[in-house]
Image (cartoon, helix red, strand yellow):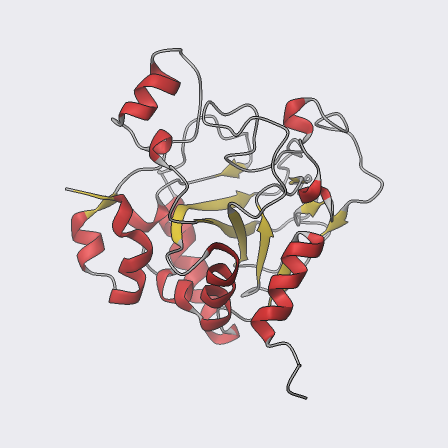
Length: 270
């Protein structure tokens, strides 16, 4: 049995081949409720601009709460991100993703840097390589009714996505779409090129989660940093739009365990 793949290898191959994989119980069942409560409390009053009605997102969530950060170095998760992006993987984005009852559906898209609406996007056609990862953390059960994320398996191998006018309309139904339901504590990891969308929340319960993205050492993130030359040149001066990721507060960074600091040391400002 010496040729048997390790668990990390299996998940790595799933991301490469189909674009996504699911890690169950990254946050243990008896701990996820408390994490969900703290994330929800931290989100109140901190929603970023231009969030559609019924939804909430807090970029730079690590500055508001650190309740989730110990799980970033969960062995399967960290092992998978390193297997795909290299030893010096970095966290590029932390945010809540909240869908309240009645939240309407969102557009099909791929995440930064593949979203063609962002100033700092990679021009299509994309090379067929894993360059950025998106992880979606389920802090409540993700169900068909409460708006579990839709993905299009295999779409990460396409040279463009609907934000670039490719393949389908941004609100169209896709015949191969798969809804990623799962239990609270689970984490879906996908290639950021993956086409995905949030459907309407038709239930009477909120869907609470996290979006945490991961980058290799060589990917330039500075267009996301307020005050950087890249942001001034590519976003501010031409009057374009892009995500803005707040720097990690120095005091917050100093309070993190050393293995977690490694994931954020590139994004610390006094």
